Length: 224
Length: 301
Image (cartoon, rainbow over all chains, first blue to last red; front, side, top):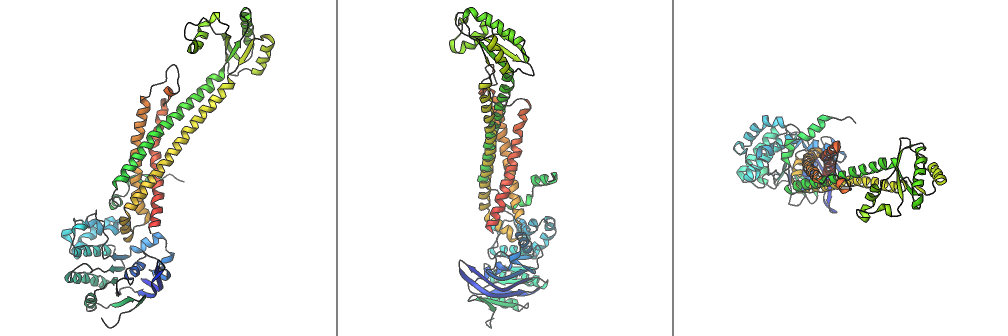
């Protein structure tokens, strides 16, 4: 699905990380951990084509990301559902239109009618459908972001600190949704600081935990 | 390139969802409307100027080209004989349709702007003027001058060429300047709309980022801005054009004196010409916004 081969990324002349090798196979479940500032969000952005690697090769669905034109990047993003820590909603649109936005920009508005009801029920937001993002709680926003990420039925779900702003109960609920998606065959990559979340996930699904530290990506050790 | 009306309809109809996703920014909407309106208003006047000077040039060119003047400057006792001789020469000159000596009243009317009414022209040693009207083929001025020099030495032929040509050239240049002004107005409109579009894109940077994250192509995002600015320019230019046409219509109509400013305006079917300004403004806005949007989106990535 997504492969990083000997990838490095520098910003302002400073190397954030290098020699990164990562392969997200279909149906796999990965966690990405590491201290703040290690470059987890940057690594995720490389995985969905928002940033270009300074060196090395990033392949999105078999295509070299560096060789993809802007339209091709947009098309690949339709196959990757992204959940941000700050959710990234359009505050002037109601929740339903925000969740349906990936379908809207793909010219598939008609599919929204069919999918939205079930999706809102799945994330438990039926009653909030007409509300606007600023009216939602942190947990509701995260679930809405997850609903938006999966509405296109993407192959890959990438989540950046999805439980960063929610309590333990809500983080468990979000994890359950992500595990369900993985069982449906979706590839999942989650960046998180939350070791409890990782432990909870390991009890439900086979995961691979990666750690980004000292500018290198490695398999996490026995602390888990 | 084949003209596809469905593409135009698609543009005007737009994508309501894309429009909803990009919230309108109030100041850019007002700026675009005002700019398009003001520029269209000025364009109407530039167009009116071009048409007026065009008419002037055509009139000078056609009317004055068919007339000329013969001036008889002779002592009083010889004047009548010289006039008769000149008329005789003119009657036998090929290309001359008619020739007649101006009456004292007509000569008095010509001098009235400088000397006032009741000038006793009969008592003054002023030349007698003969008006010559050419037929369709025209006469040979060089040959006529040679004959007059031999038979009517007191006659001086003025075929108006000397002062008519610079006047026509000036009028034609003024007409060209009017069209240049219209082009400059169009370019200024494009520049202002480009700035407004860039401001709108900058104000919506976060919206654009979110749309990209969910897979929106640049052309989809640009389309929302392009349609909005095109319709604003069309509406603003329509208001400005009709205001300009109304203002031109209020100008005094051409009077007998035929002063240039009183002739500024449109005549007949020329009143339809200003109606091309709003669609042209929309076309300018379309291309200006499209270029600005795609360039800005490229730079923002």
